[in-house]
Amino acid sequence: MTKPAGRSAKVRSYSATDEDMAMLEAVAGYHGFTRSATLVGLVRREFWRLFPAGTGDIRPARGARVARP
Image (cartoon, rainbow, N blue to C red; front, side):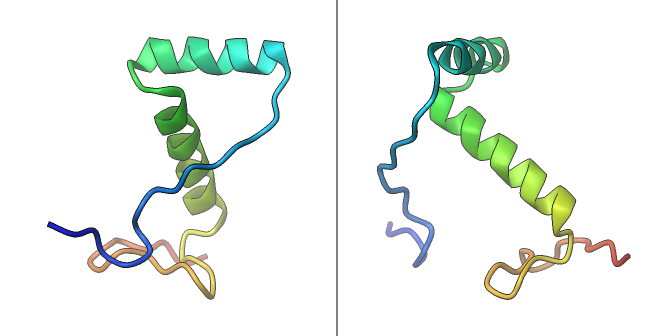
């Protein structure tokens, strides 16, 4: 089975202090997720909090309930 276009994961890198990494590892461990999954989850949650109707390039999933301001 192939993934839909634009949904495949790509390897990325980022810079973080040792303290930031320790905090990320603590949060990921608490929830039982990988560091990568924790970062993605936090970014997605914040994105939809800021842009509940999406942006020009990113639209809500079909059938999603959208709160209009």
